[in-house]
Length: 159
Image 1: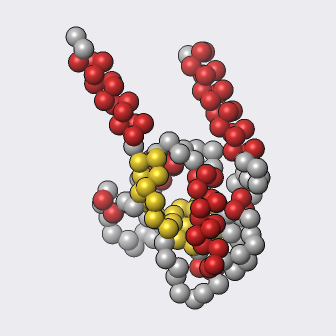
Image 2: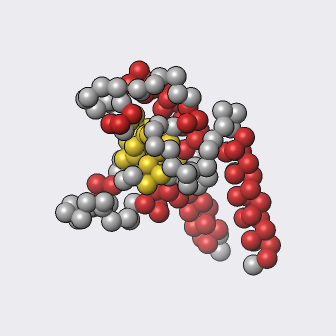
């Protein structure tokens, strides 16, 4: 009767090994050139968090930023103008937004294949108040991660 355990182990492996291809472009309003910059392409684990990607994005897009001295923790990512919350894993954000209707109602139906790579926009200006501010040391991200796991443990205990 090892088959149920093997099935569970296979599912767990797929969840832990899951990754998501991302295509990140710099917003036109934050770019110093009139042409679009090259996108940043990465295959990110579904269990990863966006703030850990910000230093790499900053290094990649710094030559194209209007103000290259902007620190990485002031960058933020959006999907169709909606800011993405930093305290959710990338896989959860994809699951929440990939089924969202397109911002332009004139667009045709979007196939599942067309949603990958997941296209994001990197922003610097027009910081939204609903976003939590990040700090240079990463303490905000660490605190959110710890709080999420504490709340998860508490919910499991009381269920």
